[in-house]
Length: 465
Ligand code: SF4
Ligand code: SF4
Image 1 (cartoon, rainbow, N blue to C red):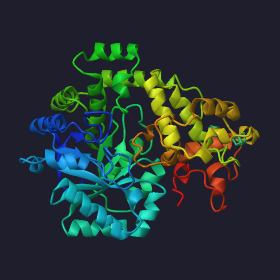
Image 2 (image 1 turned 90 degrees about the horizontal axis):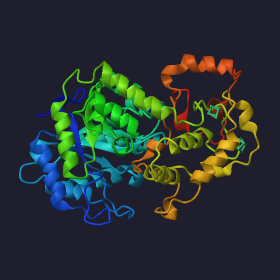
Image 3 (image 1 turned 90 degrees about the vertical axis):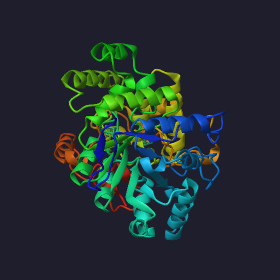
Image 4 (image 1 turned 180 degrees about the horizontal axis):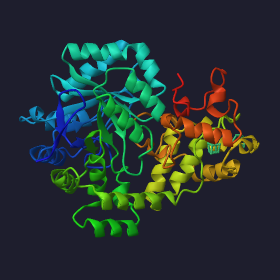
C-alpha cells in the first residue's frame, strides 16, 4: 500500500501520492472532451492501490468560456460513484477571478458541490491566492466564508493554492487558520515561489503542504539532458525519472501529498509503484548528490546572472526587468522546442504587455543601478525577440492577463536564488557593497504612490498591498 501522512494539524491523513484531475486523457483536441472511460479506470485503479487524495478545480478541462465550469469536476463526481467517494479526500478550488462578492463565494461552492455530486468537500482551496487577490478576498469576506462553510458542513478544511513569491506566501499563511497550502515545488524549483522556506514555514505552523508541478509539467521526465538520465539510471536503475522527482519530494520534511496530473495508465502504474516503494531514508547521500548535479547542469545554462535584487527598478517605462531576465534564462534551460513554446505561452499569458521587454527604450538608467553590471537593455532586446510575438494559441483578450490558473507560471522566476525574507542580512550586505545605501529598487516605491514593481516580488518580505 501507499504511505499515509498526517495533513498538518488537521488530524486528517492522506496518501503521499495524489491524483490531479487537470491533465486527463482526451478523446480529441478539445480540453472538455475527457475520455471518461479511461480516466475513470485510471482514477479507480489508483484508488484501489492506495491513492486517497484527489484534486480538481472549477476551471480544469474548461472550454475557456467565461464563468462556465470545466469538465473535470463533473468527471470526478461520476468517477467517484460506486463507493469510491468514501475512499478519498476530495479537493477542489474556488475560482477567485470570478468572485466579486461574499455571495459569489457561496454561489460557487454550492455549484461545485452540485457538479461534484458530493455532500461535502474535504479540502476547499482559494485558487491562486496571491498579492493582489489576498487583500481583495479578505475584504470580500473570504475568511468568514470559510469559517461558515466549515460550520455548516459544506467543507472540512479551508485551504489555498499559491503562485506568487515567498513574502506573499508568508503573509497569507499567517493571516488565517489554514489547513493546507498547495504550492509548486520540485528539485529544480527549490527556491521558486513559496520554495523550501515556505514548506518549512507551513510545517512549523502545522499547515499541510500539497505539491503541484512535481515534474515541472512533465519536463523533468521528458526533457532531462541525456547525460543526466544516464547518470541517474546508473545510480538507481529501478527508478524512473518521475520516481526521482517524487522521491526527492517525499523525502522533504513538511511535504504531505504530491499531486500528479496523470494522463495515461502507464503514468498511473509508474507513480503508484514509486509511491508504494517509498520508504523513509530512500533518498540518501548518493541520490542527493546526483540531483544536485542535475540541477547544477541546468543552472549552467543560465545566461544572465540576475539575482532579482530589484535595484534596477523601477523602470520609468514600466518594464519588469528581473521578470523579463528570468524569462530570458528560462528560455535557455531546456533544449526542446516544446519547452520553449511553453515558455512563450506562459510569458504572453501571464506578463502584462506593459511589463514586457518591448517597452524598453534603451535609456540606460537601470544599468548604472545594477550591482551585477548586466547590460540590461541588450538582454531585454533579446528577450523581446524571443518572446514578444503573441503566442499562436492564445486569444487576444487573454494575453498578459496573469491568469491565476495559467498553471504554468513556473516559468516566471526561474532557477536563480531569489532574495528571500530570511536573507535580510545577505541582502543588506550586497546592498552596502553595491553602494545602494539609500532607498532604491522596490523599497524606493514604498509610499511613493508610483506604480509598484510587482509588489509580490518585494525583497523586503512585505507584500505590497
Ligand atoms: S534601459 Fe530600458 S529597462 Fe532600463 S530603465 Fe531604460 S527603458 Fe527601462
Ligand atoms: S539590478 Fe541587476 S541583478 Fe538586480 S534585478 Fe536588476 S538586473 Fe537583476
